[in-house]
Image 1 (cartoon, one colour):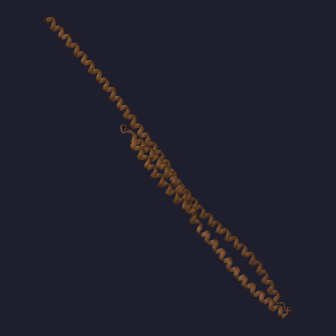
Image 2 (cartoon, one colour; image 1 turned 30 degrees about the vertical axis):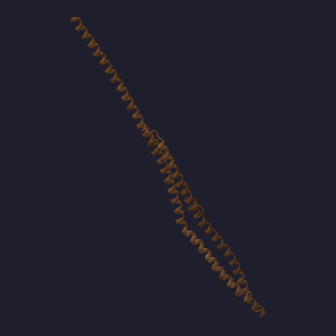
Image 3 (cartoon, one colour; image 1 turned 90 degrees about the vertical axis):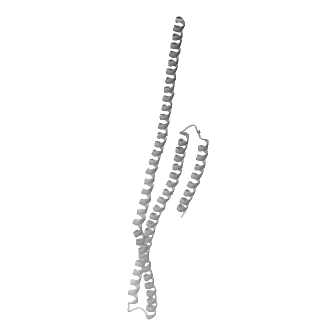
Length: 236
């Protein structure tokens, strides 16, 4: 029950932390440089990684508790079976001792030399002992039944424990996969930004070359104009 309560607490804390994270992301997005086309993408990627980490930690806690619950059930059943076997063994020893006493008392009561008064008293004791042995037999059967019931439930409990551990292992694999996907997202952003930077530089370079070409053309035109003007002046 404590572990199940801890699971509920882990879920509540997860939702609280995710809500706080959503608020912080909204604040950072509102402050992001609007002139940077990659600022928002980086913020989204950063907070997606943080949210994933929060959920993964919470899920890991829940699954650890589920494994602990399942393994606890297995231990409880083993203890039940062992304790019931111990109780059955104790009862069997007492019954065996009482059975020997009963046999001895039955031999005594059958002796011809025993007085009638003593025989009556011993017969009464034999009756009480027989009732006690009958009760011990019932208790022994109950202990054995309890041990057998616990052992019959054991395979299902062990399977539940194995399932819980397998689910946890699968979640660990998904966590690693998510981490790799987040690395890929950041890598894609870096690549796109590098491409955009390279394209901007190319445009600047092309623009600079174009401006130089226009300047050279204008210079040539001016030179040609002055030369033609000089020719006109000489002719005139």
